[in-house]
Image 1: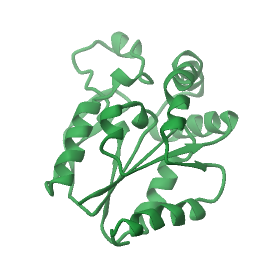
Image 2 (image 1 turned 90 degrees about the vertical axis):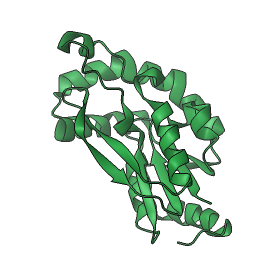
Image 3 (image 1 turned 120 degrees about the horizontal axis):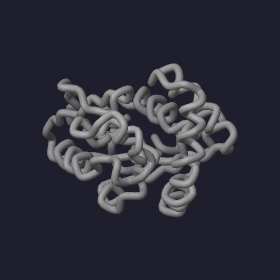
Image 4 (image 1 turned 45 degrees about the vertical axis):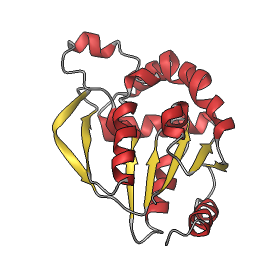
Length: 203
């Protein structure tokens, strides 16, 4: 049976860093990012796309993610969408994710979905100081997504922070394990690996 680890937490908290560190500790594991499952906005104008609240749960195709987790658990590969954040559309390409004994999935709103929570063996919440998180968010969106600092800050104040308070922070209570994203990830990785090994999964 597949051991599925879910990693959630606020923007810039260190979810991806923890997920990638975990991935290196297992011989056979696969990593999925909830961000890849943003809904395709091809049918909307550029102005309409700019008005979408990308920090609300309905902006993500979580139903497809749940379906993919089921398929991986059944030993079948899945075609993960490749999302273009500069245009808010899915590209024509996909990335094939193959089944593995350990599946790691990470995303800000991951634990907000009961359907996803039901599919997780271990739920992890990464927390970090809000100031540090917003600085990491700015750096990521400018460096990796071609955004301006002004647009990132505008989005943070308009939707990121309100949605964090409404949806993300309450998910902390759902977690089996809460880790500090400001610290070195090695201890958190050791604890998570121990959970997986105790279940009979190999590392």
